[in-house]
Length: 298
View (cartoon, one colour):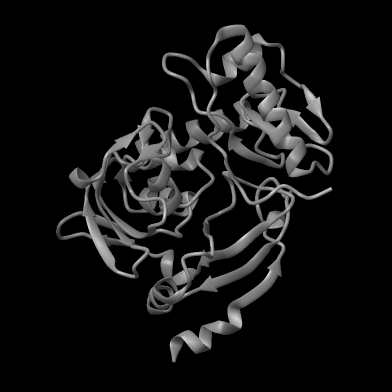
């Protein structure tokens, strides 16, 4: 019955590209905003395997190609964005759709330390866990106790921290699993110290990143013992333009939709950077931004 009710949230040929931080790219053939766990379970159980699935978080670390996504995009609603603190055993339980900024704010208000770094990541908890996101010396897996996932077979499983392998921007959680929620150790801290760290992160981000531009965050992963931005700087690509896409003058590992860029503009500029870095340093830059969908047919 609940599933039938939620069908009103199903959209066809939805402009998903415009909802991403880049604001470029095509439409999703199907788009379903889901607010109920049972509805999500039912959908996953019965949707044919041939239909590709995309779970969309805040849209900050993704590039939808101009030909669009020929599958089903799922957006988890408010019931998946809860933040609860179990004070008795100091466990923080967070829904996968909870925004990083809201989590860092909640932790400040409750004098919980260790989550200040989330102020510097414009994403959601589920996306963070999927790619072991981090910055300013911390990663999301540091205080993780467990996470709850929905398998492709429609089963809900709880994975303990030691059952998951985490590495730099990688996790062993299966790509077709949907992260529902996570539990973290809530470490008590001093509120004024937390406030100071949040202030420092915010200031540093404004000074070092193009926060007011249409961007997708860090474009490439840092290679071992190297910084992606330094390699891009060394090939003189600061401010480099391709169509409407631009390498940020403020931070060279950020690309910007500067002037109605197509997703192809952004991707081709990124591939050009990868080629130049390889030619000069024999170092392979791997994309950190997730590229999804099909190229537009000419």
